[in-house]
Each structure stands twice: as C-alpha cells, then as structure tokens.
Length: 550
Image (tube, rainbow, N blue to C red; front, side):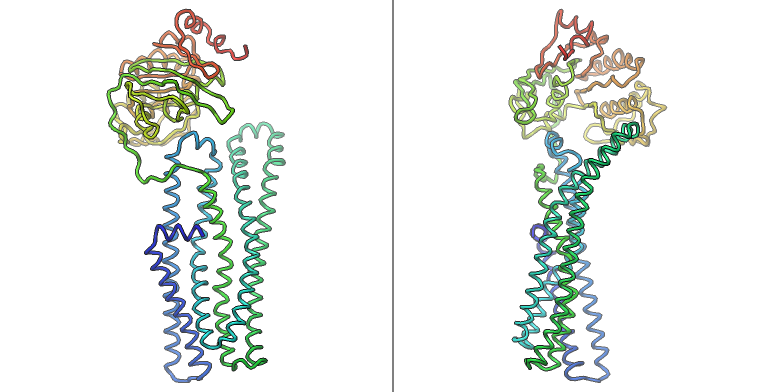
C-alpha cells in the first residue's frame, strides 16, 4: 500500500525497529501459548513456580506489545504531522492560477478529511502489522504440532480471509465515492456560510439550496456510507463466525478423524482463539487503510508544486528603474477569455491609473503585473533583463498589493519578515484615521472585525508596512466614504509618490485622474495608454468611457 511505502521510504530505520519489536511481541505471544500447552495442558504441572512464571511471561508480553504499538503510533503521528506540513508548504509554493482552479473547498477537504483519514489509518496500522506477524508465527508453531491439521486450518483461514477481502473491497469502492462527494459537501458548506446574509433575506433561495443541492449530496453520502459500513460489518461478522467454525473443525479432525490427541486440539483451539482478535482487528483496520489509500490518491491529483523544505530567498532588491511587460499574453483555458499581447513599462516613482469596464481584463492584468499569474507568452523584464519563470520571486519582491478580495493578516511585518517599523506604522495610522480604531500589541492587530472600508485601510497599512517599491491598489477607494476618498487621492497618493513609491491604481474616480502621471485603459483584454483628448474625455466621464454595453 502507498501508506506503507511512503512510511518505509521516509522512516526506514525507525520503521524497521518497530517491526522488529512487533516481531518480538508475536514471538512472546506464541511462546506463552507453548508454555500453556507444555505446562498446563500436557504436563498438568502443579509446581509452585508455574504461576509466577506464567504471570511473568504474561506481563512481559503485555509490556512489549504496548511498547510496539506506542512506537508505531508515535511514528505514524509524526509522519502525519510531516505530511500536513509538506502539503501546506506545497500550497504556498503552488501558483495562484492552479490554486484558483482547484478551489478552496477541495483544498480544505484535503487538509481535513484526507489528512484525518491518513491519521486514523496510522492509528490502526499496528493492528494490521501485528495481525500479519502473529499469524505467520502461529502458523509455524502449529505446523510443528500437526502439519496435517495445519493444512486444513490454513485452508479454512484462507477461505475466511478471501471472503473478508471480497467484502472489504466493496468497502473500498464506496469509500472512493465518498471522498468525491465530500468535495461537493464542502462546497455546499462554503456556499451556506459565505452566503449567510443573502440566504437569511431570501428564504426561498435558502430552501432551494437546502432541498435540491445540499440534501441531494447529503443523500448520496448517506447511501455510500451505509453501504460501506454494511460491508465492513459483514466482513467482521464473517471473520468472527468462521473463526468459531475453525475451532469446531479442529476438534472434528482430532477426535473424529484421529489426526491428533485432545491436548493438541486444545492447543490448536487456543491458538485460533489467540489469533481471533488480531485477525479481526486486521480486517477491521483494512477499511481505514483503504480510506488512506483513497486520500493519498486524492492528494496526488491536486498536482501541487513539488515539496521544497526551504522558502526561496531572492537576491537583494536592486535600485531598479523600469519594470516591463513585453508582449505578455494570458488566457483562461483553451477557449477562455484572453488578455494581450500587453506591452507596459513601469518607471520608478510613477503614479499610474488603470480604467476599464467589468470583464475587460483589469484584474487579470493586475495578477500578471505582480507576477501572481505566469504569462503564457511574452516576458517580464527588470531594467531590460528578462526574469525567468523559474524565479518569480525576483519579480514579486518589488510589489505589495491590496486586491478587491482583501484578506487581513494580524501581524504587521516589514522588510525581510521583521516586525514593522513602529514609527512608520504610527504615521500610517494617523494618515488613515485608524489610530482610535485599531488595537495593536506590538506588531500584532488584535481586532480584525472591521467594516469593509476600515478593512481596506488596514490592508493598505499592511502593504505599506512591507516597505516595497511598488504598491498596487485594486479599486481601493471604492469602499471609502467621499471625504476619505478625497484624502486618499489628494494626500495619500502624492505622499506615497513623494516617498519614492511607484503606485499602480485601478480606479474609476474620474474626478481625480488629473493626479495620475499616466492613464491606462483595458478593453477586451487589450491595454492602451490614453493621452490628449482621449484622456481628457475619460477624465470628464469615466462611466461613458468604460461603458461595455456599446
């Protein structure tokens, strides 16, 4: 199985040590049965030393078995901890385009359901390994007692295991379907939670989503989980009943066919009873191990970036003068919306505004400009030198951004990940009129429950604290009141420019276009610079200019 292969590859020697400990546990168990057979069944030894010797072996078996289980369980949880960390790191290293294709629901399901399935499998893994080792060791002991009875007994056990496996294989089929349905359920949960306000207002929509979307997926999940549990219980019951039948077969062979005496039959029966628990546990562990197999396959299908333990450290930021997009093209899917070819040069210290109607490609251009989307054609140049797609951080390290779907972090960091400059933070708090609104503990923000406009101001503070050369603002002022919008355009942007920052702002506030050094427009995926009369007309009425209904 993939689980065992991965564990053995990453923890070869610890895993080997645990297996040897498990083997010792099996040997002690078989030795205890042999002691019972020799001293208590065959010889009927009444010596006073028999009981202490028996109890000593019993407690030794208990200690070694517990130690092997705990060692393997600890090893398993360490592996799961490592697996989750690697998965998170791969997400962080994977391109934004790929993450958006997967969607948050699938990734959250991977981090929760899949990792949980692997964790549970590891908890049950000792049961499977011990069951296999104890069965093999017991078979050797039984072969020494009576080879003829062993053949019949092994045939009976083979039928038992094959029947159990056929039932468990059906469990695997339903588990695989359950995992796909879980993605749909996570999307339903996300819709209900994120759309809570709209669903509270429109109960018809809420009922529609509940009755036709959620209930359908929940019904499919219930169907497959019931079938999986049914086959699992059938497998356990089958194994249980067949083991009891095996004891009857043993006494029939001994007493009915005369293949062995009663003492050997009793030993065989005792051994089968000893095997009953580990075999049933092994059969019971199989569904969880199969679920882990499904989880591994699901995680591999995400096609994330390969795991790299360290974060890339780009070269120190140079005193650049120009950043250029040359013949850059990008498209969504085979026949999706296309942007480009785009030719754009940013000069240090410029203030640029970008306008465009909905669906014109503004946000896509912002993603390309910041290096979050990799162009499908064209190149990125820093001071005339092309930046390789294998080194995106050489380009991205120059940018801070506040996008429309802003995410707030609770820590203010500066250059190199160090705590933000307190003096710089204080100046920005005053300029953003947030000194009374934010609660700070050092570089940590204690209250993130803010209005939308205040959230945008905090996002700008987070971006400014990073002290990067270029600041991209996507419709930042759209959520501000008219008074602060005026402050933003007339005071904050000139202040940023005066401090040496390059500002690229997506905006439709035509009253303030005069403050821009250059005015750009996206239309149908094409970028043009407006100048002369075209710029004057856009400044007079940006709504008319960006009307997409014409």
